[in-house]
Structure formats: C-alpha cells, structure tokens
Amino acid sequence: MKIFGFRFDIDHEYGLNKGIPNILNLAREYNLKFSFFINMGKVFDLKEFIEMRKNKEDPSLKKISIKNKLSNFRLLKAVLVNPNVGLSNVKMLQRIKDDGHELGLHGGMNHMNWHRGLDRMSDIQLEKSFSRSYNLFKNLFGSPEGFVSPGFRWKKNVLDLIDKYGIKYSGDMFYKEPFYPSYSGKKYKHMQIPLNVVGSPYTIPIIEWLCANNKSENEI
Image (cartoon, rainbow, N blue to C red):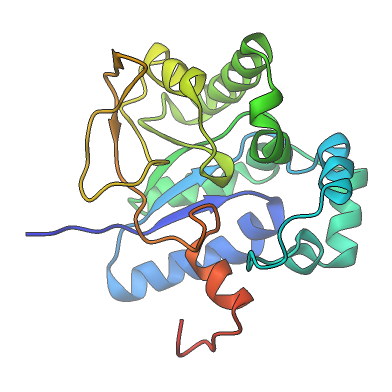
C-alpha cells in the first residue's frame, strides 16, 4: 500500500485568514486530513528583498512573484506592518487542530530571511531564529512533531536543530519513501517524509509552479 499526503505551508497572514478556511471546508466535505505548517515569524525581510532584486533569478524558473502572490497593497502591508504570522490568528490555527488536522512548524522568525539567506546565517543566528519560533509554537500548541523549511531550504545545522529539539520528522528532502537522514557521517534520529511532488527545480510548491506555467484550474 502506498500513502501520500497533502501539505500546506502557511507563509503569510493573508493565506492564513483567507485561504485556510477554504481548505478546511474542503477537508470536511471530503473527510480528509491534511498537514499544515505555520510560520511563527515574519514574512518579509528588507535586506533579503533588496538582495533578491539585485540578483535576479533565472527567468526560466517558473514561479509567481511575491507582488503577484500578495498584491501591491498586501505587499506594502507586509513591508510596513510585517506581523508574526502565527500570532496574527491563533483561533484559526486552533481550528486546524480542532478539526483533527496536523499542525507543525515552518521555519524560524523570518520566512524570507530563511528562504533566501539560509546559507549566510551563522550557527548562532540560525538557532536563535529556530528556538524563538519553536518556543512560540510550543507555548500555544505544545511541542511540534513536524518541521519544514521555507523554500525546502535546509543545511546540516537545520538537521542538527531538528534532532536537538526532539522534533520527530521533517519534510524537505527528496526520495521515494520515508527515511532517516545521514549527513557528513552523522545519522539523525528524526525521519524525513519525502517531498516528491514539487515544481521544478525542486524549490517551488507544485500548485504555484503549475499556475506560473499557465495551467487551468481543471488541469491543476
């Protein structure tokens, strides 16, 4: 028997407030259970945004720009207000749990900083961001069993932190079946649930990638 699951990463408050209720209603209609991962920090980072604008990505990478995702108004709101997403609507997150879905942790205290600048973060910066996010989640919902990284971006230090904080599994690697990862000779205690339906080049969520490739709703 083969099992697959739907995972929804909640990056910003607009998705939490407007998108999640639709997904929960759909889940009730079809009697489905999903996994949701919440960003407990901020969605925007000015330094990373400027860096992104300076170093333009390969235009062949089909993805949706942050402006088109959020609209000009919501992007401006993210820049000026930039709230902690997970704290902006705790009731909606509790509804996820009350409906019997899984709620896990998504990154540290700044989504864009992790997604775009993980390789430039020092060990101290990374653990500070991770631990603050973890503790915010734990205080509200208990210890998370699952963790996933923004943009599926991970490195050895991320694997170390997942083990250190006793998280049971992550989902940022690619393989045909669940496995216990090893890296640089170290075997880890947490399991990796493989992410194997994803947009090319393995850093873009599948629905975003299909939308960026002008697929219709029926095709998606």
